[in-house]
Image (cartoon, rainbow, N blue to C red):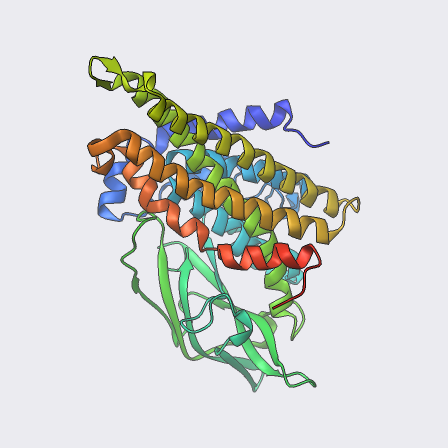
Length: 394
């Protein structure tokens, strides 16, 4: 059965020490100013956080599929200090690096991976569109092959890591034709930042994740070489669905970081805060709420690392992809909804102080909601779980 090894726990301490030293002292200011700390990305690269699964030939750690659970540990620990920095790593690896690493040609890997794995550059993943969110098959962005070049027109929305000073490339899905059955042929195309006709829109004003870099993208006659096709033509939708399976586990790990922090904050505060001459932890109304957070944290962590373990076992040929998909959706659904609940409870335990930005529970409260939306909404996860159970499709 799965369990985290002593090496995992050593790695956890390494990432926690980094987060406490490099992020925690500044996070309130960065969040207030919506400042993306680009200087931390190379430091995360030096720790090897971007290359845990990547081959050594491109600068990765060479851990292969066994590196996925380590990535989840890293995301959890960064997310425990700040959710926005956790999503920066999750998107940088799962949505930026992994598609190129998994489906890219040797030339594409040699061109893009070394800097991405070293933290010298970031990459984005352009799937969501203004009118095509969960319905990714409704993609309107189009790419037409003309004189050996893809000409891309369209728009993407809510794209993480797409507009930083070190963003090097964004991979986008686009309609490249029509299949024999009339469905759209969707392919993935690599667009380097700075490509004429490729515009990064101003950053969004967001409820949470203020530190994370998030933009809309527009393409007006953006031209890239035919060789920038990622993987096989017409397989883009399938490629990104596989990418999302991994992303759901990683987002769930981010939610575990949120849960762990809420458990620590409410445990501490409930013992320090006095009401009627006694710590509020002595009142069942409070202690039961903190206990509920403890239960959710433990359950979510077990679901997440079971899913990560199954994913690694599948890569080794020992488990089916259906098992991974089901476990990923269950972990994502439970962990993210629990995180939203835990931040609400924590804010209540803190009372008036929980409503004040100087206390971290306020920031985590704002940050948690998006966990139920990104990488497939809670509704999508319930649909996938039901499908995995063999229930009739709607």
